[in-house]
Image 1 (cartoon, rainbow, N blue to C red):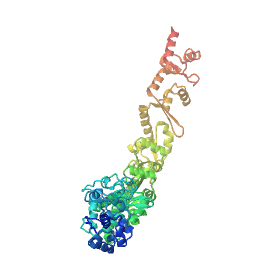
Image 2: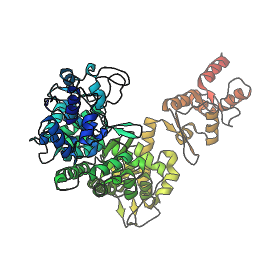
Image 3: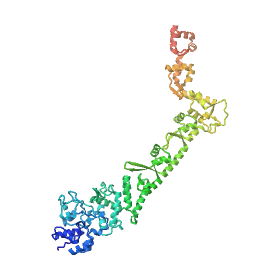
Image 4: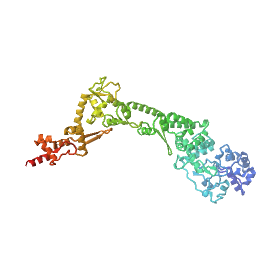
Length: 615
């Protein structure tokens, strides 16, 4: 019998096929029958120690050396790590000598370290699976393409793909490795499979980053471990453990972006694989990660679905928007204003389209204390109105006149004023307490009602109190403005001052014009309606009262331009009876004709007519 020389790393099934060919057997059935094996077991390179002993006697070899090259030697390894009915190969290896290597039977082995090329696991033309029988025939039974013509991807020796595969080769041969030295090949791959639950559907963390990590490809009802996909997935696992736990935390950051229902299932699957003493370092790193995330508030909204402990620690430290509104009694708009004004800064967690706001409980307590301090210093417009005993409209008048400063706060609607400023308006050195209420005093309401037409207003009253020109009297401990009484002499001085000020700024008021022109209110209203006198300013109060001011120059000119018959007799020496007769005869015009019984004649017109009559 022609004996075949073993090749480096050659599998037992490969030796069988090459021996059959060397001895001109049509198929390896001769060896199959001699060894008492099924064809499936033979093609799967699954030779028992007895099979190897008998085959060694046939070819004059060592049974232990053969058995090491059989997958049966690795029967304790997870069955999914071994290829049974199909194989993968290196096209560059079979170009030299057509053979199959024992390590190619392992699903996690994806690279030929000799040629630094990716292994081929499907026909390069029709993507059909490849059997050991097809490999030794040299071509695809489906499309006829030659296997040695297949092209394979180059693998850079500095890449994580290469480093990962070199690590796996060493584990297979029981050699020393740099990562997770206590883990056998089987333990390492089982751990990697659990870790890949975290990687699945994420972008690769190593070049090329654009590729999505898939540890397996679903084909029909089966999960098919694609060589290229698995190569990238295992390379990412190696990358993670090469800088553990920092890279582990990066993987978890990406994992947190996946939909929570998927995270729940995958995290559960991952945790099932990290039980036991050897996995303690991973469990501790995972717990530390969640603690760090909780410290910074960077946790998903639905963390409770896969980590109850982390969710509890999160709730001890943070509140959601809804919880803040419920616990602190603030509306959504108020909370948004507080965030906009940086009164409190939430941690913003984005998961796809979902956005979560987390508020640190310590920050909320500080905010609550600050708001409490602000509230003790401020009152709203309605409260200021109640404290001063005046209308809300009057409060706005005080604000517009600068006696009160309005401020807005993010934690409440509307405007606020200083409580101190409000009290200062009422209580001061100029207030006389415990005074008798005599007839010489008039209360606030009466003062405002009687002299409003003279320009007395809430603002003026407060200004004069502050300046000491009015000294209010009261018998009330916490007085409001309606509780004040004022001395008539002080009011008269106030009216005089107001009149001077008003005439300077606005001109004559309605009463001034009546007095100057010596006409009644009805006559003056008719002159206004006929636009014979046009006021420069008109104010209508809330109760419908009208206040008029007239330009001083206009009234003075009007007084100079028109005169009565009595004035004509005194100033122009024209008898008043004659003036009245001329008016009745229509020789001179009366401005007040049909308006009043008084007569107003244009001075120039009267002088011109008088001169004409005398000539």
